[in-house]
Amino acid sequence: TAQALNYRGYATRKLGRVDEGIGYYLKSVALDPRYAEVREYLGEAYVTKGEVARAKAQLRAIKKICGIECEQYKDLAKAISESAKG
Image (cartoon, rainbow, N blue to C red):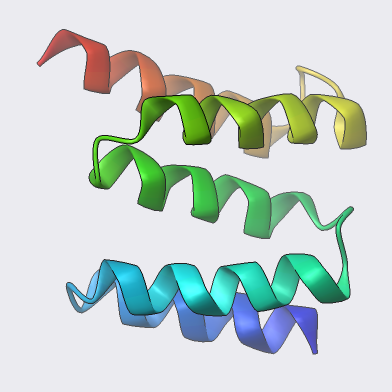
């Protein structure tokens, strides 16, 4: 399921295997493009890799799914903002 792939991606990313985690996230997105949580985690993975443009693309996707007040939008926006600081 999209949720299972998302959680597997999250666990893999947190173990330091970011590229492998992104692979799981992308499979999750393919199954459910409107799953905001996977978009957030995928964006955070891109931030980790320094790929801010890709992270911002996920932020735009989240905005279309649930707006700018949902937790996923706020969390990814914060991660992007913090990456710009340092």
